[in-house]
Amino acid sequence: MLKIYSEPEPILEELDAILVLAEEAEEPPPEPVEGIPPQWLPSWIRWPVRILLLPFILLDLGAQKMAKILVQPPFRKEGKCLKRGNCCHYILIPESRGLLGKFFYFWNTQVLGFYRRTQQIHESDGKRVLVMGCRYLKKDGSCGHYFLRPTVCRKWPIIEYFGYPRILKGCGFKAVPKDTRNSPS
Image (cartoon, rainbow, N blue to C red; front, side, top):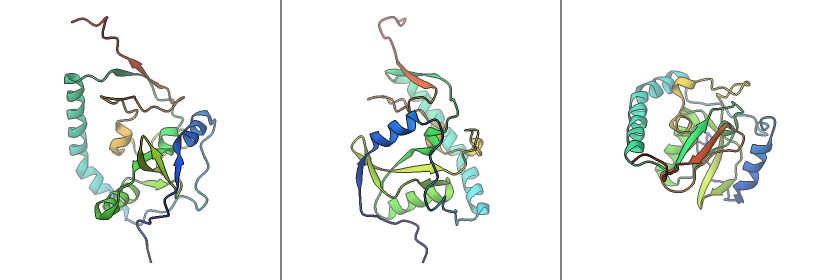
């Protein structure tokens, strides 16, 4: 029987230890012991769905950029991607339950191409998250499907309106506080 969503016994671990190892690592982490699971949803279904949804994703991202003009976050992003791939190896996806949670898991694994790095459920910022990796990351650290990459990849690194930015050390980006005292008013 094919299982799309399995609910392992929750094991809450501190995610900080995993992320510190990721930040200090010189090489990508090994693949899961069982290997990267294959996507069973045929590509002739996956890709048209992603192409059909692309205009809506771009519209949403454009609206978010407009909102950043109106309500400016306290930090700004500087730097560029060093193509180390850590953000692609450690994608944090919120754990969801119920029917919507099963659909969300299906969407992330079968349509977007993520796979679970571990079967454990971790805790990040008080939320239960799954640590996933991307099957489309190339050996040189670039994205194999850059044009159709998911929203979580398009928005990385995440600069929040409230709170602190989420950036992996060593990725090439940094968050710099905006100096409100010297800005022209």
